[in-house]
Structure formats: structure tokens, C-alpha cells
Length: 208
Length: 99
Image (cartoon, chains in turn orange, purple):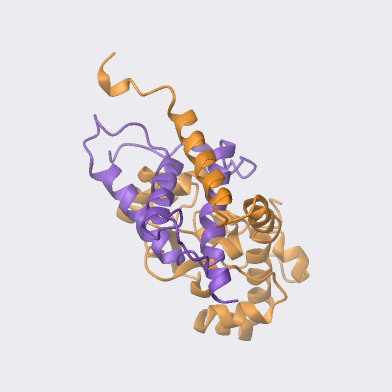
């Protein structure tokens, strides 16, 4: 076995120890209290979830005026809905929605640091943070989408949005056919995290 | 590199946990908490994270070790805490300063 394949076996433990030590020091110095991190995590895990994004998309599907406002000024439109408030670090103020339409498919990546629109999508799936995904989605989005099961015709333009700047993009997928009679709540069930990243389409009612 | 395909589980792992290990979750919560309570701006952490990931990407493949996103997160967290002097004597907690 070459050196290329030998990693320190204690890497996990070393990272864990660093995090434990840092949190303990910050508590000891009075920068945070022993409950601070748990409080923040529990808020995140209960309130900052893809459920918020689903509600936003479903509203945009049933209300074209809302959809227009959502694209023009995303934070203001999101504030119209009764969703949990974002946090200072949660990047809610930089939210920006892009709309799929016939002939245009949007895909969101973050090529530098894997930042993500947490307030509407929660925490990213692990592959979103993978360097191969990030590099290939930027370079050959059509091929990557095809591998992920989204085959777009040559006439469909793919727009790739890189969140590394100040905007945290999310995609409003197209409303599937056959959903005319559905309520907003039912529609929200058709919206997945993947669809809001742009690596999938909204689920059609026949599949769900 | 161009031949590296995405793993098939990419679109079927909705139920997979976001964090593999508890230390990753703690590191995430710490970084967010410190920004939330005004010890640094989220942008500062983000820049530190971009720098940490950048040095991994620029390092030769045979010296840089397996990809582990949250290791870069921890590096960034340590750096931003040091740059802002959070652990130094005389550090003024912004929550006290604004009170």
C-alpha cells in the first residue's frame, strides 16, 4: 500500500476532540453557555427545514402574483408567509428564488464552500458538499442532471446558479401536470429538496 | 476526473442523516451560534471556510488526504475564533457590550 492510501486512523477522534475542546473553552471563558449550542441546533433542526421551501413553492404554484413577487424580491415575498424567522447566520436575508419554466431549467450549486439556503431547505444533502458534484455540476450540468435522472431536451437551457456570492438560490420547479384540483397542502407534498436544488423535478401525482 | 460518475444514492438518500458523526453536528451548531450571538459575521466564517476548502483543493492529491467537509469546517471555526480573539483575556462579549 502506498502512502497515498494511508490516513491517520485517528482523524475522526482528532476532529471530535478539537470541537469538544473549543466548545469547553468558550463556555469556560463565558463566551457561550453550556446550553447555547443545543439551543441553536434544536431551533435549526425543528424550524429550518425543507417544509418551508415546500410551502413557498406551493404558494407560487397557486398564486401567480406571489410567484412574480417571489422572483422580484424573495425575502419580502417569503416574509408574507407565516414561516419561522431565520437567524443571523442562517443567510435568510440573501434568499433568491429562480423559476423553472418550459425551456429553462435551473440548477443550484455552491462551488466554493457549499453554502445553502438553510431557512427554506434545511441542511444540504451530503453529496451537495462533494467536490466532484460541485465541479462537475458547474462544468457539465446536462450530463450530471442526466445521471441524476433528469433528462432535458437539447432545447432546454440549463442555468447554473452559484451560491458562493451573496445570494442563496433555490429553485421553484414547474408544477406537474394533473394537479389542477389539488390544494396548496397537497401540492406542497410534491416538492422535494432535490427539486428545489434543481437536481430533480417536482413529483407528479401519479408517482407519489 | 470527467469519468467519475455520481453515486446512484445521490437522489435516493433523502432519509440519510445530515451528519455522520456527532462532532460534525456540534461544530455546525458552534459556528452558527457564535455568528448568531454576534461574535463574528457569518461572512467571516464563510470566508474562512472557503479558504480552508481552497487549500485542500490546491494541495497535491497524494498529500491531502480523503475529503471530509467538516474537517474544513473545524479548521475554519478555529481560525475565525482566533482571528476575532474570542478566547483572549479581555475579550468583550458583544452581548455585554450592547447591554
